[in-house]
Length: 80
Image 1: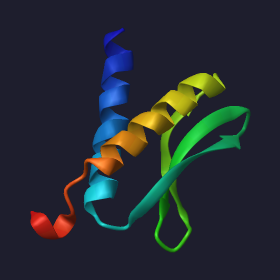
Image 2 (image 1 turned 30 degrees about the vertical axis):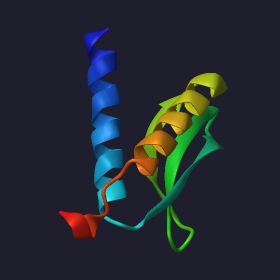
Image 3 (image 1 turned 45 degrees about the vertical axis):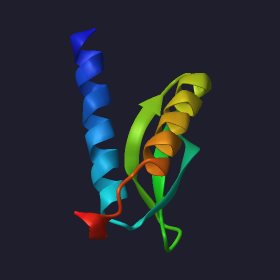
Image 4 (image 1 turned 180 degrees about the horizontal axis):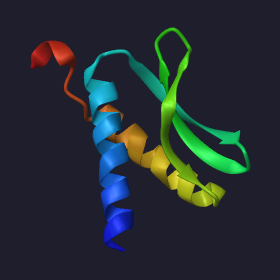
């Protein structure tokens, strides 16, 4: 269980960094090699590296909802 929590914290830190960069536009769930992958989409439409990977589509959609909530409450990079 500890490993799972650490992995979650890691992808959330990577996401927070992506959002703070000001380049983040939105997130999507895509399929890759049989997994449901949450990726960030930059302003120019290119995808980020995978933020999280799940075998279960529902877990990926839950993670996507979390990403959207974090992005809605993000502080712009200029405010730092």
